[in-house]
Amino acid sequence: MGQEQTNPLRKIPIVRGAISETERLMRQFQGHERLPAPLYIAVFFLFLIIAVYFMQLAVLGIGITSDYGDIPLSVLTYIIDVIMLITTVDAVMGISSKKPSSWRKVMRGAMLLFVFSIIGAVLGSASATGLVALSPLLVTAICVPMAAIMFMRSVRNYYVPPMLEMPPLRRWIAFALFSQLFPARKYEIYYG
Image (cartoon, rainbow, N blue to C red; front, side, top):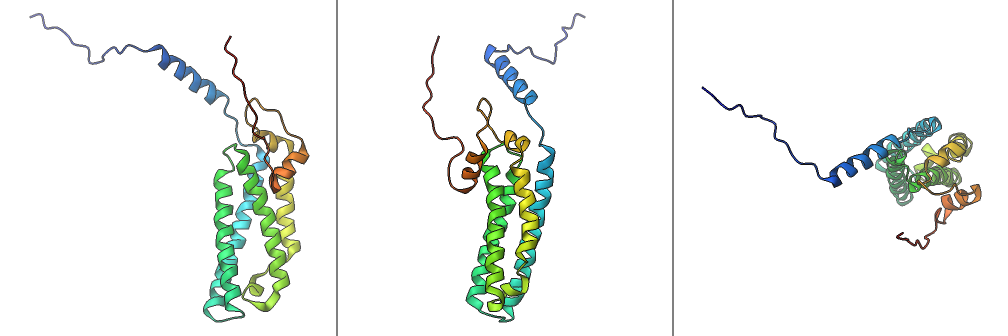
């Protein structure tokens, strides 16, 4: 008996836009760069910074609950350390995103750790911070190599968006502190 065999696979017409979208995705995938090797070292230093913040939070928590030193100052330091911990974790999670703002987060995290270690050393035993204040020299040994890694040309090149030129080093330094790396420009589109 002549049963018709039906093909379980349907033929779906492919629209031209779907092909171009696939080609675009393939070009994007092929252009995807791996994380530069020095950034893995920077991630290691960021994990050291996270460990420092966890240590500070643990000791500050014990100091606050045992009424050691100036309690309001200890609570303020605790809140600042929580904020800095969250900022550093955010920097670690975004370091591979190729966004210039991720580069800035890493640099600012290192700078703020250094500044807060100096403040902790100055405050001394006025609060529970004195129990966990790291030597600014030790913090410098963590922050300076990380900053040097972030200023390496290969790392900076990783964070430059496609089709833009590499800004000079002084613009990267200003970007880490306060300015924009790529100022807003007017773009004109010419249809030819």
